[in-house]
Image (cartoon, rainbow, N blue to C red):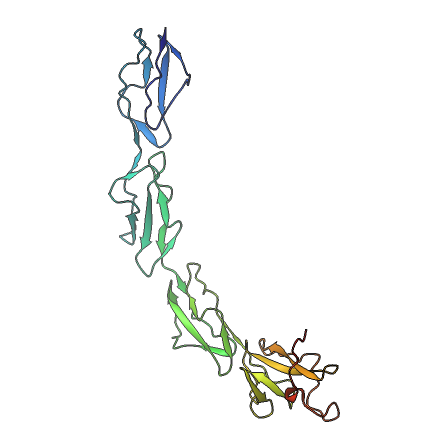
Length: 270
């Protein structure tokens, strides 16, 4: 005669998995990794009645003791889940008392063997006095060493444009994070011309004596001789470099009677 299917035990596997078991056949339960058996029986024999004995086995999750914190109270942790008991696969998050830096993993996981995956350490980290940047300066920074996570900020000299993060941070490595750079303004590469700047016609020789700033755009007027009309070509200032468009001829009476900026705009210039 045959036996019914053996009872399932949560978080356990059976050594011989079959659809039909014979009377007298023995099976053994094993708890999965991360789970430990209670004092219940692990081996069971199929009875002549075709039934299995009452199953007393429970597979309980492994627990991890609180992590050892020997560092004079400078390292603390908090549970991700509520409750104070840590079970298999539970996670905790470590923190250091400022200004100490956390070296190692910020999180630890309760492992199948009942220990924590890793415990970080808290270390005093300092960065050297920060240096300035080209064509710019540090804002109100004192010449001293700085602690981990302290920041300084930068500004640029007049008409220079700051690119990148305004603040630099003292990092775990003892180095400063990326500093910004100061991008140069552009002088106008032509002595006389009418150009489009911020949507308005401007005279280079009077309105744009100072040039334009990094990232700004100015449009030059170019002539389409066949159609006797003018079109504009935008050029951007990139860190002090501004390139005249090839079609631009400048204000020379010899070239043409009318400056392109006074001609009618081309409707469909490609």
